[in-house]
Image (cartoon, rainbow, N blue to C red; front, side, top):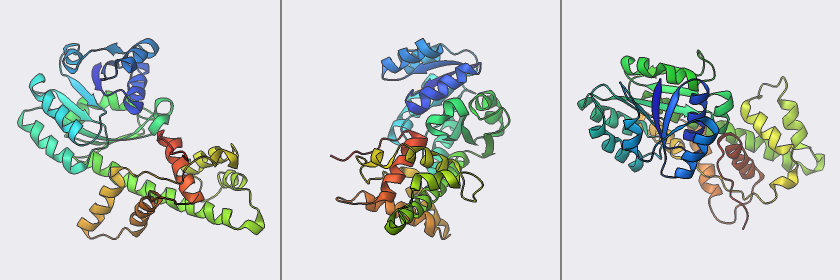
Amino acid sequence: MKIAMLGLGKMGGNMSARLIRNGISVVGFDSNQAVVEELVTKEGLIPSTSVDDALSKLEGQKIVWMMLPAGEVTEKQINDLIPMLNSGDIIVDGGNSNYKHSVKMGKLLEAHNIGFMDCGTSGGVWGLDNGYCLMVGATSEVAKAVEPVLRALAVTQQNGWAHVGPVGSGHFTKMIHNGIEYGMMESLAEGLELLKGKEEFNLDIAKITELWRHGSVVRSWLLDLTAEALAAGEESMNDIAPYVADSGEGRWTVVESIEQGIPAPVLTLALQVRFRSQEKNQKGYGYKLLSIMRNAFGGHVMKRKS
């Protein structure tokens, strides 16, 4: 099986490598040709110099997987692809698009008899070795056609991927997933900051996080990553700015709670805390921990003190 991958950044590049290692041929394109050449050398990627060139190297039913920035960039690429594809070909959006945008794109492509899949993708920089969690929105026909790719990307052939519903539902599920992620991260950061603040006990936060990893009710992958980061020593945090970026999914989740009239106070407050961290002259051990967690699972850049 052979697919095209458009966008070979941290996620797209690693996903391409995992597919190739699991027997799926990948034709890759990125505007940064150095990234393409590196994957050709290291992983056996089939290179292309343009989107049109990438499509010309696919046979039969074409599957085009996109890992591009959400919004205007993704929409433009989909519109550009329409005249290049044939009836029955498939476009997969594996980025973090708004689910409402995915529903819109699905209807557009349906009018051209082109299949569409929105795939919420979780796993971050660890997905290459450990596999990804894939939340898929599509028709049953499209999901069946792309299933070998999903199996190759997932944690195992059976686990780590699911066709959750119609077009839009994959990105909707990922949006809620990320909202929950905000809340889990915030609760962990606040608790550890409270421990840190009890100065008369002089608590070893690294030791406590490592302790909690074993048998505790709050053990989790986020705790594992936090414990690993803290094991490097408190001094490693000195130059990290107490600044936590927020991505679109957290905001969209809060908007969704308002539109549905379903209270989501924890998720909302977790988002608001990130807004506060972005104000000037903020201090906070918890903010630093949130930044460390984001870097650990997703490779997100940590802002450094100027």
